Amino acid sequence: MIKQTVFPLSILLVFFFHCITTLGQPAAAPAQPANAPVQPAKAPVQPATPPVVQPAKAPAPVQSAKVPPIQKGVPDVTKILGKAGGFSVFIRLLKSTGVSDQLYGQLNNSNNGFTIFAPTDAAFSSLKPGTINSLSDLQKTQLVQFHILNTVVTLSNFQTLSNPVPTEAGDTTAGEFPLTVTTAGNQVNISTILVNTTLGGTVYSDNQLDIYQVDQVLLPVDIFSPKPKHKAPASAPTLSKPKSTDNDDDADADTDTPSVAAKVDASGAVTASLNRHGILVSLGVAVIASLSRRDLMA
Image (cartoon, rainbow, N blue to C red; front, side):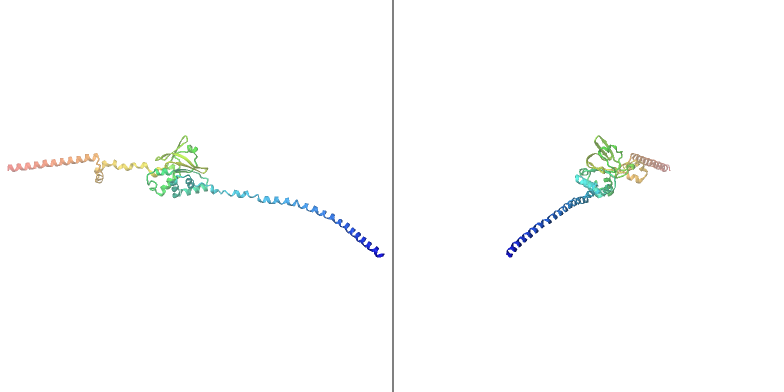
């Protein structure tokens, strides 16, 4: 009887214990939601980092300022003419005389400007054969410099130039390498006394350099017709020929073209000689006649 009563009681205790254990577990569940608010607290930290990275890339425009070096903007005369075409002879003279290097150096290291009259290959072909090759190195340099003005002259400013216009070849105040520039409307005329030509098209133009085409080579008087005023003394000996009759050396020099005075003097000398011989003959005849009379009287 006792055993039958204990067994059901034990089952009841186990069930009761199980129920108590089960009811005790939900008490720990509310602890988990307490951790949830910790995660949203980290979200504001992430937006704070992007602004720090972006300002670090801001100095990029500094690199673009170094891209165009100043030297790349310096005009090279020979390259400009070579690209234009038709100026091979003038390019060769610019290089052989060293004028091209001088121009590049001055354009690169100073604020100087230049105006160049560039003759075409056809202009050089129109010269007599050997004209350029017969010049000395100095004369070739002066010829190239004669085509260069030490200032920038635009098409609209040629009328403001004062003649004679100075060139790189010499000082016009001393009468060397005169160059005259005149304008008539839109036409620009250039004169060197030996050559008269008009300005052709514009080959190149900027604030440092102007290059214009010319269809004739500008021949300076100082090279191709030096000292024209001193040629007159060369004919002076012809003025002194009449005085050569008193000098045997001068007479020999003028035998091919005797002067009128020389002919007159010569004819006078012959007449005088004949007169002398006539007097001597008459005296001889008189002496012989007198001697023959004495012989007859004796």
